Image (cartoon, rainbow, N blue to C red; front, side, top):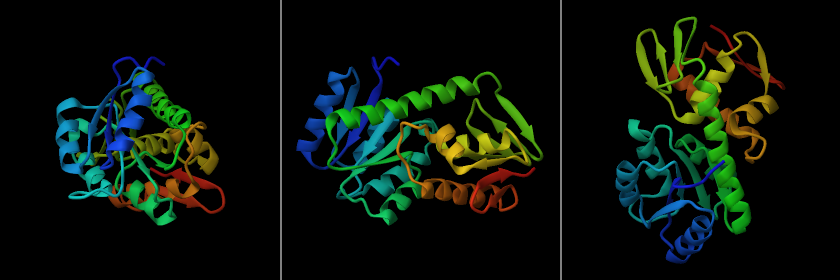
Length: 230
């Protein structure tokens, strides 16, 4: 895929890291915007509408988790990809990041070539998802309508805005009501084989969907995966 003019917002309170990552991304043809705090990052994101935001977790004033949550509340940025870049690799931190609406989680230190590869994979996955959704904009499953153009779920007339990965997950499950989707298939279809995430990533997104849609739509098949029931 072409990276020309693709905007990336890089947010970190360490200037050395900002300059290092910016240099390597600009070499690949990306347009890189930078910020060293969450509050400023939100304003830049609203103004520039980047395709992808790389957020450090530990920052003064407003940390990455809160920044991510606030960005996900903005309709303009609902399709923006967000990944955390942080030295904190504890499992609870990753779960908190996905809870806040992140799409991926990259641990420092990371080699520039690997970082660029991960970013390209996220953007490629996002682009292919958009292309796949354009052929059929709306799909009605029971009392839920999946609006693929707006990236919203309409439940009994009420619009429910979802982050990209939650939308892609429910869209996948609802594409074949009653069919069981194994966890490995879900990871491949929603996150892609070239983006490394753990099994618990799925669990976090399923839990968030159940909180928004209700407990009755997504069933857990222990040891296998999940299915959608209309």
